[in-house]
Length: 226
Figure 1 (tube, helix red, strand yellow):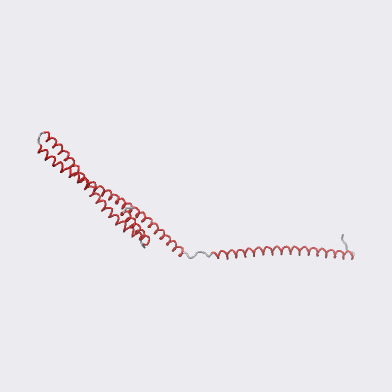
Figure 2 (cartoon, helix red, strand yellow; figure 1 turned 90 degrees about the vertical axis):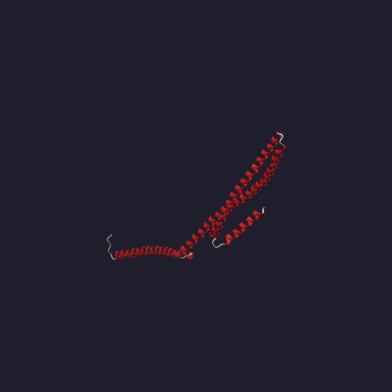
């Protein structure tokens, strides 16, 4: 693991710890995002400067390479023409351009490595920004859930406490008592009707018996209409 990645992991872990303990996590996230956004802009500006500088270095070593080739060809032409001194001068400048091309090529290669590293860091900054931005939306959703829950709790308190479950037990007992009373009254009425029916039947029999006795008595007295 690179030192930069380890430092980044430590920084993110520290931020997450701060986030969990923050009283206002959204405010902390906004502050972090503002700082991160500025770092991204500065890194992008620096990257553009590095790219421009690298392009300049490349142009320098390419030009030196081209001039080196030209001076070598000139030295060959001078030798063919018997101009040895001119050939020496051309070769001397060719060697200077070769050294210059080597130096600028090394600087260009070094700048490319720096650009690659800067691009990676820039991409990491943007990835961190997106990650924290997503956490902002998550914490906003959490805070909204808490706010709505508090409103529901306040609403329930304003409506008063809900019915005690024991009330339904007592109500059930009361209804059962009423049902028992009604059933008892029905049974009593039935018994009364049966009693009256029995009484009526007995009275009718007694009446018939009295009527029979009276007829017997009349018959004995000689009064008989049959």
